[in-house]
Length: 86
Image (cartoon, rainbow, N blue to C red; front, side, top):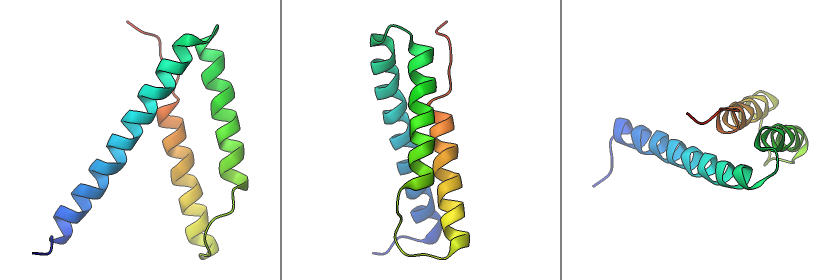
């Protein structure tokens, strides 16, 4: 039985969120092992932003490419936000 559009969208969003949570956890673990976790996150974020701007993408319209790159930057910014433990 095929899923309805709402279920498919919910599954897609949940997948994106779970991927972001896994990435955040991995980056936090690695960051805590570094001498300066904040500096590590800042440097990693800068390198990832550089990569987002230069990595070749599949053929698509320029408008879609801009949106894809903007959404990836947004995800990186969310995952690598500097935060102090409580």
